[in-house]
Amino acid sequence: AQKVTQAQTEISVVEKEDVTLDCVYETRDTTYYLFWYKQPPSGELVFLIRRNSFDEQNEISGRYSWNFQKSTSSFNFTITASQVVDSAVYFCALSEGGQGSSGSARQLTFGSGTQLTVLP
Amino acid sequence: DGGITQSPKYLFRKEGQNVTLSCEQNLNHDAMYWYRQDPGQGLRLIYYSQIVNDFQKGDIAEGYSVSREKKESFPLTVTSAQKNPTAFYLCASSISGTLTEAFFGQGTRLTVV
Image 1: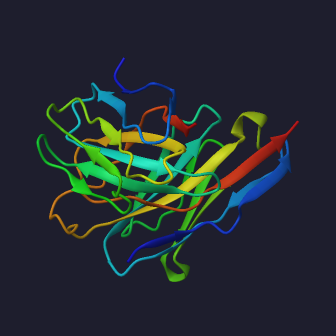
Image 2: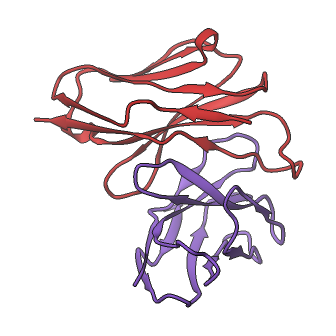
C-alpha cells in the first residue's frame, strides 16, 4: 500500500526566509509519480509539480525548488525568499504506476498537509 | 475559461437528509474524482470515474453515491447513511487516470445542523 507522510503540521517563517517542506513516501512500485499541490485559503488545490520515479533531477521554478531522492524516499519542497502570498497548506501526493484494482483509473494518495504561514 | 465548477460553496443539511453536491468540468477530461478533507488531514478518495457510466469506490465510499451520466458531470450524493458528513468536499478531474495532474474545483463545505 502507498503512503505519504508530511511530518511538519505547521511551519511559520518570517518573510524572505527560506523554508523547506518535507515529504516522505512509501510504495512497492518501481514506477510512480509524485506531486505537490498548494491549497490557499480559498480551498482550491493548485497543482505545482509532478515528477516520475525515473527522473531524479532536481527542479527549480522561480522561487520554488524540489529535491527528489529515491534513496531516502523523499520529495522535499523549498521556497526561497518566502512571501506572505505563499501562506497556504501544501500537500504532497503519490500515484503508483501499476494498474489499480479496476484496471483503469489510478489514485492519488495525499499526505496530511503542511500549513505554512509567512509573517510580514 | 476551462475549469471545474463545484456548487454550492456552502451547504447545510439536517440529519437524516440526503444532499447532492454538483461537479461540472469543461476540460474534456475523462477521469473525475471526489475527495473528502477533514481538518488537519489529507484528502481521502470517495469515488472516482474513468469514463461515462462507470465509477469505482475509493477508500471511504460508505454513505456516498455517485453517477456519471455525462462526461462533464459527476455529482456526489451524501446519504443519511453517512454518519459524519460534515467536511470539505473537493471534486477533481484529469485527462485520464494515467497519472496526469488533477485539476480541482473550489470545494463545497457541508455542515450537518
